[in-house]
Length: 264
Length: 264
Image 1: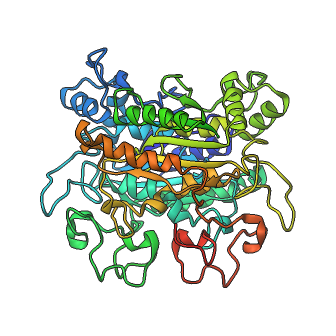
Image 2 (image 1 turned 180 degrees about the horizontal axis):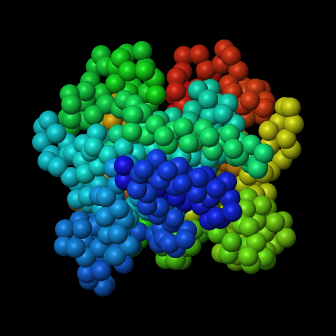
Image 3 (image 1 turned 180 degrees about the vertical axis):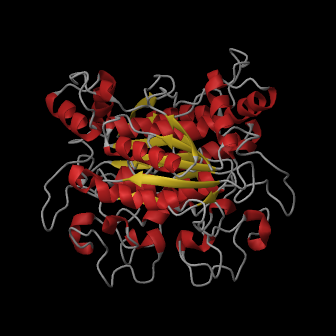
């Protein structure tokens, strides 16, 4: 496999840094090619703005989608954006690795998504019609590729369980897993979440790494989260609501899992 | 009231810019004091790093929480962070206004949360014990203040309805509303969401502004989303799971709404 790890942590001498190094070594030992986008080390510009289109007419009104569309189409994207898109094309497997800060991605990684996911690349792809609302949610540029989150959090697993106060982890991660990975077409593997990150030290790092290692070894054969594809008949188009009768027995965000599939 | 609007859009000549200007005028006409943190105009540094503690020992290992704790306690936070905290102390009402990008806040606003919400200010507040897991989720520094999201999205309201493919809007916004506003103690008002933002032009801007205006006029008397407080007996401590028997009749993230309260 060609694995791209998009990694967002400011300190190499951290749990995340150690896990990232471990992951790279494990994947290469398994015969895979690995690239890492270390966003902090790259001093990744998190903020989407007019500079992202090198041909932007100064003084003009900046419409983020329109400028993204033009820049992608005309090849005038800033070099850092184009380089990341090339890595995504090269990869068949993408891992987003980050500490869960305030229940979502660190800003630098959100900024990677926002700037790299250009119009015509990650959205605004495919036809709109009465039966097909763009190539997205299971279709799109990333179709055929797989993606997985590796997330650390200081909280306990019970805090993120189905009745945990932070919200169940699958619900908290839904905007990312469904909204930024499944959306452009990735098959999304169940996340690897590492709880009580503050309590991991030299003594127990080995078992934490071992558990991650097992997930990495299994990347090619792990069953993806069975999200429903948008254009395969489960949703009314263009209302995009789940058709009546589907999702019986499931509630909340879980209705977007295919009927008959095991809970993710 | 003292209203702080934290605003995240790159273009003044946008729908968001026009709504922001409208909101400031409407609130001031209502006799309120208003401050705006226009993050793009401020060139807000989105990326949390060692520079956020001016006393950080160069070359040392950067532990984000630890450096935040020290900087807040010792008064060595970078000036931009301290200034925003002063605005939050001044405010009794906070509005976060942003376009929904990839189902969450723009990176620049996520970076405002991450850098301004220091240890000892927004988290790491209050005692930990068998019955009290810190002052959070309805308690904390922001207790007594109210907060509301004003969110624009290109999608339709049906796309974010209870069976909409993007996920129901309350679930999509839960990590923000529950995790970043209720968490430090705000009463969180129901969000004001503006759908089909791409179809708003001079002709229909008036009615869009009018609807926002009504929400702004009602800020002081609007019932907050009835989230359950963490330390008031509904959750087992320290597992932080909702006690058995509570939340009957609700599912998914809605179990964190108080029993007997209307659905948010």
